[in-house]
Length: 349
Ligand code: TXA
Ligand code: MG
Image 1 (cartoon, helix red, strand yellow):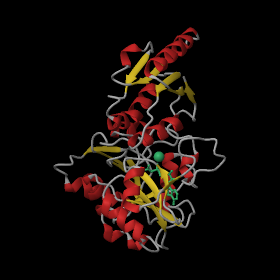
Image 2 (cartoon, protein in one colour):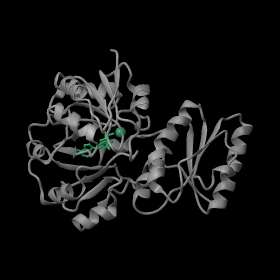
Image 3 (spheres, helix red, strand yellow):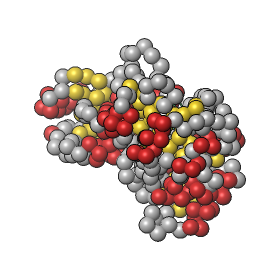
């Protein structure tokens, strides 16, 4: 299969291109599309065959449920058993935007889309191209991140092409994703809502909208002895090919420790990489030093992380050390992804 790539400008959207993309979905095909978080690999959420194709193209286990993307609130009631008060509150506060809600599903959503679960993940993205595309597709687009399973989520069309060329009909190129990390996932099917994946809609923001909110015990550690509640979070996602370790501590101690490890790695003829910040980059002796941006700008760090992990793979980096990004708010999402990429390997210095 030849994969077409078409550039779409959010300001001057070519309606014919959006229509073409929608027709592919309606005919049971697959289209990758931009969202504000990461690119999605879309298929018709109400067509079981389309969902099977998504799993195949992605190389993903089919017990890992997909997120159903909608373009407006009117689309929600048809795919859920009921719209609980909490969902209304969160939709009013954060939709369209980087928030996914888990709700009881209706019979309209096939088990192929939800990995056999009775619940469904729903998100209304804010990206204008995404919304136009979802509408043109019939209103319900199932989409995981548009990477091959195990690779970092793609933040630009070229990365989707690296992973999925030849496997899908079309890639809509909307430029770089503005946020760069996947949506926050919150489970509303339990008594107290639970965060299953941290993101740009932070714990504090959810608490403000809902009152009490809990966090899945497995988000930042792997020694809880529990399985994560979002089936996808149990897989070692976002993994670079190189061995990644996160180092936590005072700035100077971290740099000194990492430089020693980098020197050791070089003696073993390993290609080394480091994830640093603008403030610290110059102090590292890595083959491939990379800054994720200013430490004081955590949104920039979030936006750059997956790009850098991909660059290490492209450069054949074998040994990677990263600074740590502890803190509240979006830092929680950054640390969650970084720790997963590192297989939870973290050293305190
Ligand atoms: O920002 C995003 O959410 C992106 C863009 C494309 O919208 N999508 C995305 O999808 O990250 P994916 O498939 O890579 O991650 C979805 C996560 C998985 O960990 C999956 O297990 C979880 O959501 N999930 C989906 N449905 C669920 C359900 N019914 N119950 C619990 N977890 C669910
Ligand atoms: Mg993913």
